[in-house]
Length: 310
Image (cartoon, rainbow, N blue to C red; front, side, top):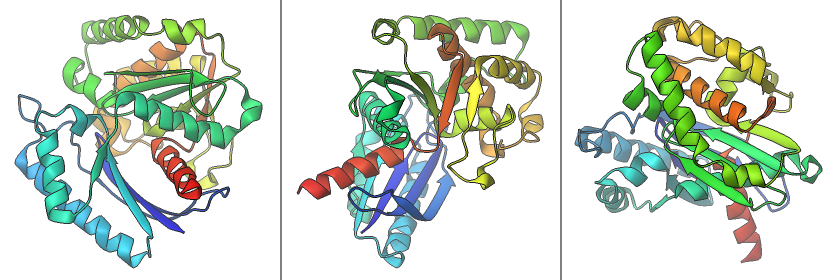
């Protein structure tokens, strides 16, 4: 069976087509994406501007054509914090439905954390014991921990790399005072929500997912993407401290010279690094293993579970 999932995130909109069967490893067949930057294309009141909504509808139309060409049997779409929090998010979702026929599911922050946790559990398996998952997106930070496929604790915080950059870190590069202020704010915000994760006990394995953490690990020396998803990759707290110091002294253009740093994400990578460093410090994590699966794969796996049980 071919499944297609359209992921409308804060930075990118991504269609992933996979060959997927219950009990089998989902095999990527096709990928189509664009950097729409929903979280940055907002009006002063936080609503999505009409031109960006136009581009979103047009891109979803492209995705439908590709899905048909690829023989997709089941197509579903979801949106995360950018549309969830926009005052006119329901209007944009209604427009997508009216003009394309696609029903967008708006995930809560807790849903994002839970589905990402499922993907990580399936990737690393039961032998990993108690997992703790750190997922830094464009609009939010998700943390989840537990022993099973459903986490015992799932937390979502407004600490995405794009959001922190836009709201708290305007300098390029930031001044020492700007850096100190945002570092303190991130840590205060995060510390207020960590008790459920800390009281659950130390994890047997701590895992980082999504583009920001993959990029930080690559800068720190992890294997490039071209070596495939099964090569072990990790990011240590000591290596991250070196990366943060390096990024703090570079502007966005200079950061694009680093491995795995795209032009579209270079400006927000420092904020993502500060959030990652805060999470590792406050949760007392010496190392994050990098998982190639994240939210999209978690939703695909849950979809397969439901289809198998239907």
